[in-house]
Length: 394
Image 1 (cartoon, rainbow, N blue to C red):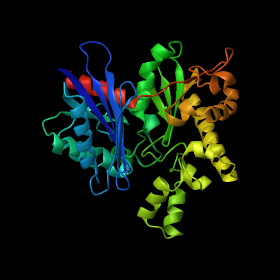
Image 2: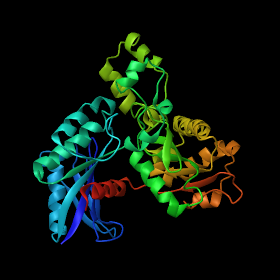
Image 3: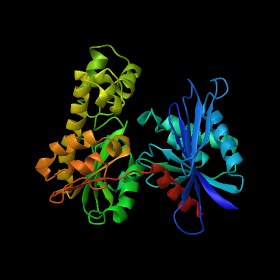
């Protein structure tokens, strides 16, 4: 009986999953991938097998599947029926915030779960749902070992200077520091570069993880040395619904002059800003690119401006730049966004190969570009599965 690892990535209205087989030797292979989406509105389970064939497409009423625990039961039921010959050996979870205490994957215990609860205010859009999925597994299969893999862990190689804010030092001691996020994605890219682009794997690389959540990371010799995100996932680039970098005095103004409550400001910054707020149309880059609205164009211009500005800063952190890597949903699929960013980065030595870019090639810079440019698909789920396998000794 072949053992398998289940990977869960829980969001506010969805529960994504991947099932990986554990061969005796070699890389794990995906057996199934899917998600329950629309929790709270119109729940639907969609899943495919390792060959991309649809194995489930089921809809329910909100009364039938209303929360992550019920969604998990449906996922487990599907996997049991389809993969009866496999033994579930463990579950790996994406947990966004590990705080100052956790810099490596962690075997879940009651004590650890309690500690992770204290980081909920630092990632209110993600952490509660990540932990709800862990508790749902505990309820459904209490005997299963579970591993938390943190989006902040990869950035713990950054120097203290990179972590500090210009606040009194005691706040740093209390844990108010730059953490960085999307670490599982950056870790996967760093681990993949030796095979995909060995000439830059140990060089000075900036990776742009561009999706609904967006950030950038400076990597040298495969290690994080700088990141656009900080204490929370609000910092840095403008994102789908988050504003990115902004003057903290704006928050004081909203509190003192606009009379907004902390909860109202949290809602504004996490759910109503970014591409959505600026365009007035939506947070899907595909929709904005297809629109002729001036505000859609404005949102795209600010998005790429912030990327170019952050790229310059991270190149300074690295002391130069050997390569730029695009990844995640927008980075992997939007030739237009990549083109706009590369045009703004010509001063760094970036020369785009427009044909390769339009075809979503692996290397999209010209042969004489001083800085090479790449498109490398990320795979956070496989990274979580690798960590889970290693920690559980499977």
